[in-house]
Figure 1 (cartoon, rainbow, N blue to C red):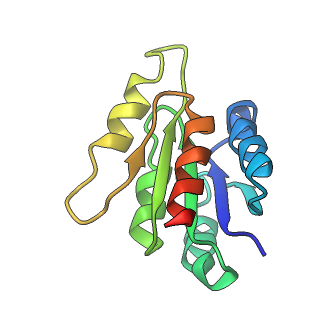
Figure 2: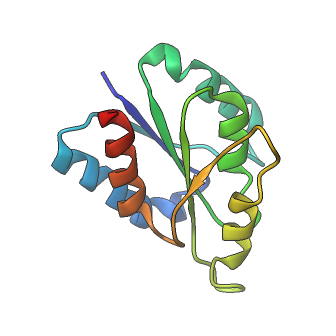
Length: 131
């Protein structure tokens, strides 16, 4: 049964988020991976995130670029830890995504790693699971 959910907003994020999957595999941690856009598929995101804990997910790694609403939306719907991975972009190099993920309202925490920091996100997820 998967303990970590990996979700990204676009298939263009897969190359980066695959590093999280590979790192979790090195630790022997089962995961599920999905591509769900917070902007284009909000109903699917709500269904997936609200049901994650019931599926055994204990941590979610959410990667998104540009406006990067995905990690915050997941954190609003999922009661356990969420780690945001801002994706680099051509326009602003990922700082837009970083700011979107870091500046969450009070009560909706998202742990955030560096731009394209999917490997560190997986290591953090492993440490959270070890607690």
